[in-house]
Image 1 (cartoon, rainbow, N blue to C red):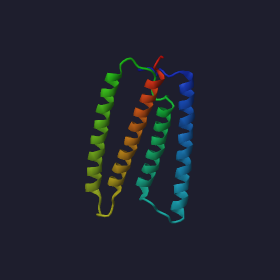
Image 2: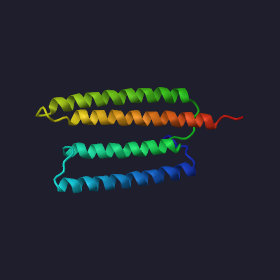
Image 3: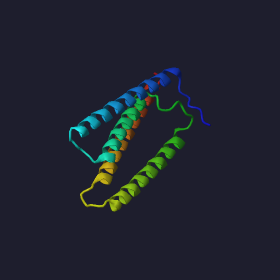
Image 4: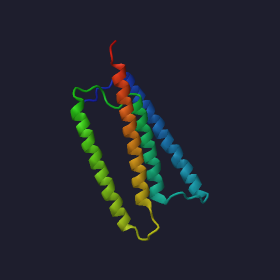
Length: 146
């Protein structure tokens, strides 16, 4: 089992951000349920919940990356960058296959749920990668000794 080498302040920030993300998820789901009860349907049933969950998880990831509470200090960054690239490739492949299967299994032609989920997930993944790169650049600038 690998230990997460975060210090106490990072753990507190991470827990606080996780609590905020959970509360945001709860409130957004309650708003969605209320709007659904009033007759407003922005997406079909499983898709609307998945979009809200993906948005809240992306909020959580962006905030913990921005606060430098995602991972602790590591020895080699080359191997972790390589692992991240392989993981992103695998996630993209699985998302593409899933979108293809869901699109083929849709009964009628006007159901774009799979494409909506794929595009939304791809955009959120790009945002998280961008924030991760920016945070890495900020950490690099902070470690410069003059």
